[in-house]
Structure formats: structure tokens, C-alpha cells
Length: 78
Image (cartoon, rainbow, N blue to C red; front, top):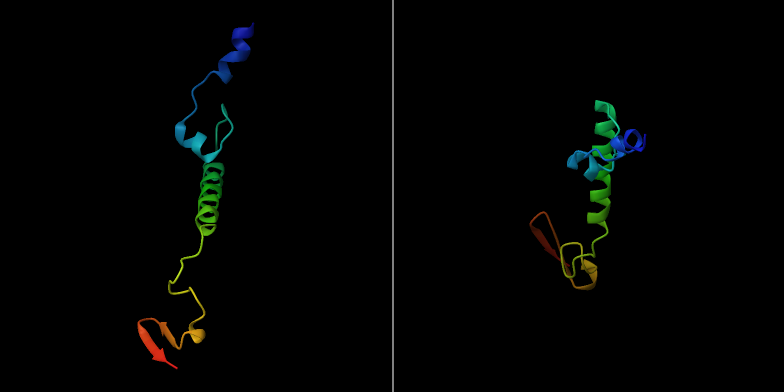
């Protein structure tokens, strides 16, 4: 009897579904799979956005404090 209860839990889940955060032992519809993929993409984008800002980069220090401004390859000296 315990074998019947433990068999669904012991099934090996697809690694792709596990990466997306799907519940083990559940069949997913195409819409549910798309929703999980979109959520995973949002989590990855949020993690990438939380990286520290580049020091001295294009969007670094305030350009008017240093006397020049560069956008789209055109430098304008104030």
C-alpha cells in the first residue's frame, strides 16, 4: 500500500521543469509551461538588474560636473 503512495513522488521529474519551478509529478499544459518560462525569464532579468552600476561608464558620474557629455558617439564639450 505504501508503494502505491510513494510511486508518484519517486518519479523523476524533467530537469527543465524542475529548473522552471514546476511541482513534481504534475502534467503541465502548454500555457502553464509558457507561464513558468516567462516567470523564470523575469527572475533572471531581475537578478541581472540588481548588479552594481558600472563605475565611470556611460551612465556613470554626472557629465555636467566634468565638463563634457557623450551620447550616441557624439561628444559635446560644455
